[in-house]
Image (tube, rainbow, N blue to C red; front, side, top):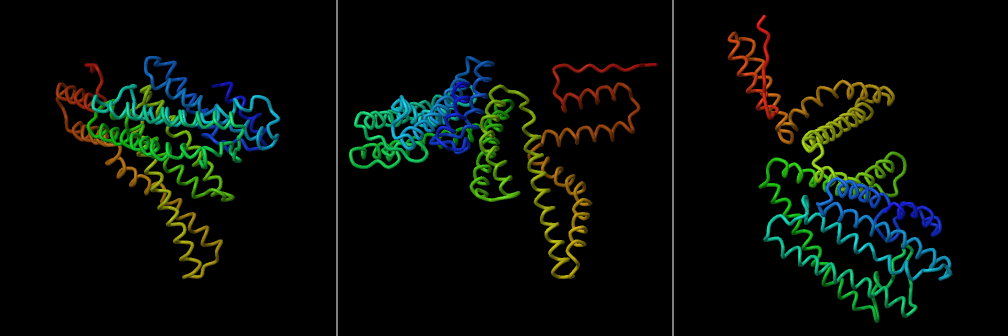
Length: 383
């Protein structure tokens, strides 16, 4: 994996393409992030097949991208003058293996097993359809090599795979049949994880919440990247940040969930993200509203309107943030909200308490409910 990642920049330069163009495969940064997560999970939990699945997906994706750059350099720029071009043609459809293994990780999340025995038929159907789909890409590539009809597009994809016509029309039939099967199995696995989330509790629920959060981050990031593509200035920077979030969201969340590392922080992350997003949207609306009102209705000079709007937004930030945070915590970070209520109620009772034994029992009960420790010991100085 490391060798494939290191080889990516010189191959991109050989093909006269940007490293971020991703060739005909997954982006370079996504493969690197997925490979790092897969390596850590496989190293820490070698018996969990998900680590090896993620690592295999990253390796196939990186191999496909390297092959895409090499194919472009060989068959579009050098007209077949580079050695071992046919090897790159065979390796380029590695994107199919990468896609299939990555989707398999969702079905087997988080411990490498299907959610229940009833889902085994979905797993076997998915594996059969994926094997036929991947086998079709390899056969089509081998036929193109044997017939010396290797034509590729600007991304390094074989035209017989992207536009199957003539003798390669059979590949179009395979895609029309098996891609929908793969999509249905993948959607079924997502639905199964959502249903499992509704029935789960404890660590399992937190793991699924991390997976769903990563999926939401990836979906929103992809949408913003498409929406802001080609923009300049601040919107362009925002689009780039959204693209990085879309690529890193699922791998990072998968790694945290599988390793069970700081699982409890997902509630805090979700509540903080939502609250700051809401506060930002409200303050932007207030700022724009004051500027428009001052400049178009009251006819105040623009510098004065901007300065006044800035001061108003600065004054509203903390009060608005506290109110929004409390509202969001009640819905998305209920444990923290209930803990705050427990502590506040204990503080009120403590003001009027005079019995030492009652205070000690009340304190131990509050700590037990708020923190759920394995043991509680209260020491009090009688002097």
